[in-house]
Image (cartoon, rainbow, N blue to C red):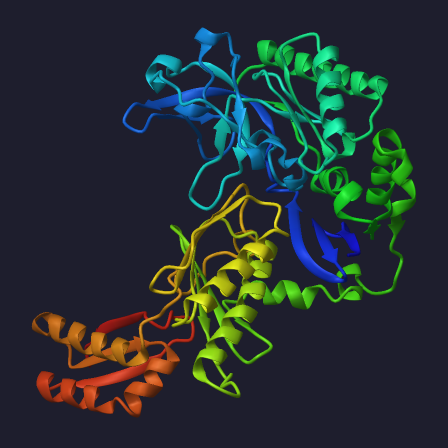
Length: 517
């Protein structure tokens, strides 16, 4: 499979697309006014401790207070270190699962559940050194952790834990043992390290240099923490461009194409310093049309923002994003099949599985996801759909947990959510419906007007009543719903005059008394 990074850096935002055989599978967007802050390290100040939630709000300089749970707070009684840290088999070595937007510290050290309560660990006004584990998403503030991790080119430094991990993509068992023994022998303090995929085959000298670099960086962060006034940014993660190059180029992409001369220069400088052998993989795009248009990406991005996604067979899926969960519904649509109903359903579900896995990855959907497949009578068909979903999700770098199909044809799954989904990144709530996604029907609005006029009728003294409404409501009241106006005039014994107002919201109306001179 040929993978390519396309970087669009001309304009007010930077967009990075990961292509697999010419198809966009991941998209990262970074804007100068709202950059992703995952991985940034801050000196924060505790604003409020919430014993009932075993959490605390921390001011790190954002408009919205960040929060930290008790299990993410280092217990000072252990001098900030854990003697025993266990990582799950998948996450321990899931270096390859790093996305440009993800925080390395979430790879995730399965920290022992804290026996201390939040009020014994933190107090209001206390200064804390924290790292953003998840950027603000919607109405939720940034999530913080005291367990710091600093990614390098070959290693990830975890100064608050004592653990050595090896990327799961390094398959050779002898090489894994060699790297682990090498890191253990070279470290001078009980810092934890994860050897990244790019570290395979590294010499002792290169590992030592990176360990020294990361240790010095951590010392600088600690020194800045001691002198800075909170809230203060102590360490900032790389830009989305450089993170993409650092985390994806070696194994997840064969080529990087950039349309900005300045960004191309900065990427080359970064590569010459950290990955000189990959210098030939970076090219500057100089075509006449925009780089995303040249690769036919804009249509796929626009499609990824729509609720309905059509399948090749004629069926379709509906993706609904809510605050609590994401619901995906599968429908046969125009597909009627060729043989029997069960076969039609199975084919639709199987095609939907591939599209769902693709859309989840492209849209960066996270949290709880419920998939409503079309009901299948045969258990064997249910297993086919479930197994194909598991296989399709293997391409996804984010951690997922999937439960078997229930008796109601539902699949419950979770996907790790670190940053905002594509929908939340590129869209905002409709100013017209206030994000509800639904408006009152025109007939309902007319009926509401009728009731409101009757409600005010006791106080109306004017000879006429003027109704100012949206033009579409005016057309309805003067046409199909004219019986409402006739009924009002008969009941009130007054003339009702309709005035269309272009500026009105469709649900907005005014009732005005008119006195004749």
